[in-house]
Every structure is written in C-alpha cells, then in structure tokens.
Length: 100
Image 1 (cartoon, helix red, strand yellow):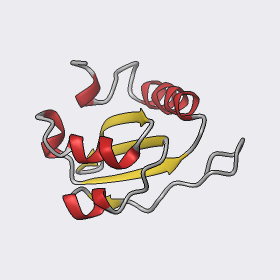
Image 2: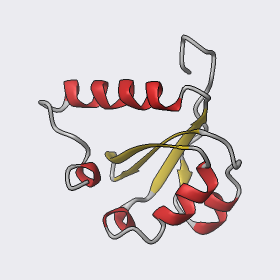
Image 3: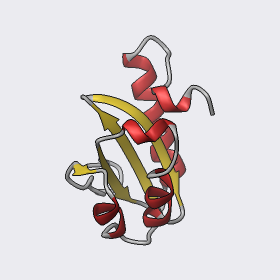
Image 4: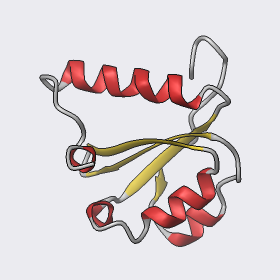
C-alpha cells in the first residue's frame, strides 16, 4: 500500500496474455520479476496496453510474474520504487532497466 494515498498493489500475477488483458486500462505503476528478482519497474498511462506490449519485449520475456498499482501519481511512485530498489542493490537498476 502507498501510505500517502492509500492505493494498493494487486496480488502477484503470472505474466501472460490472459492476466495482462484483465488489467484495467488505467494509469499506474507495475513491477515485473523472475525467480524473486525484479527485472523492471514501470509507469504508464494505460497499464493494460503497457503490459501487453511487454509480453514481446526481449528482456522481459524472462519475466514470470507482475503486480500493479492504479495511481494518478504514477511517476512519483515509480521514482520512489526505483530509489528504494537502488538503495538495497548497491545503486544498481533492475536488469531490464540498465539498458534503457
């Protein structure tokens, strides 16, 4: 839960077309991971479209699960997630963000 706004994360979902199609077409943030390792932290105006597009992204084909949060403050939430991740991982970005 985002303590500032009361917004909540979805459950972790298997990363596949059916689950991506079930995500609302809303602004928000999403996190993708494989084997308990975060690969990507993203924000978007349309969660469903971005997740469906991610299914064909070369780096993200390793992703097994994702979760998302519907939020109007998507950039602020994403920045905080990245900052927290980097603090825990010696300043490194998630694997699929290093090359972007």
